[in-house]
Image (cartoon, rainbow, N blue to C red; front, side, top):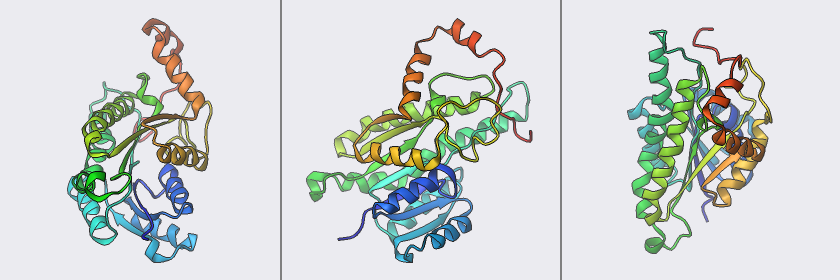
Length: 266
């Protein structure tokens, strides 16, 4: 029997790389995507994995022709993935008063939102064709969108990132309804703070900061367990519910003086 296959974007570091290692430990074959394809290839060789267990596809998720071509190449070379994880994302501080930051806002939405849809696109048709009643498999496939706790409330200086991740939550919720009739599972994961290059330059406290491997373990269990929506770690899930309930006036007072994320070039 062929080992299951997972397709992961943003796999060259941080959460993406940790997820790749966790799925590999469970016996999955890997289809890994990032702009820095050479970095992932070196990392895979360092793990000592047989070359038939993994393949690397170089693509920027902002480049729709490139990322959809990577998906089609995966289908041709490795087959239809059992799990597709749209993990690639960027987080850069913005100030809408600065004209040049409009380009940062565009890049954020192209990466975090359009890039996610383009990642899923090549696989949706084949997954629909693999519905259980046609082929007898337990599940045609699972699509995983990596959102963020930042989706819960807007934070000063984080407008592009918060809005894009709120968009991820809404998009995955919509997609979940569309996929239900075909037996395709859609999972939305909202990480709290994870120690990655994305958070390394944050200028504010990060409660419940997790190591990437710890996040990957909990994310793997959530995906395998059939969760549709999960905040990781659970403590941040509690914090998320409290934040959602706070009146705007109180939230605004609490955020006074909070450090903002660095803008591009800072």
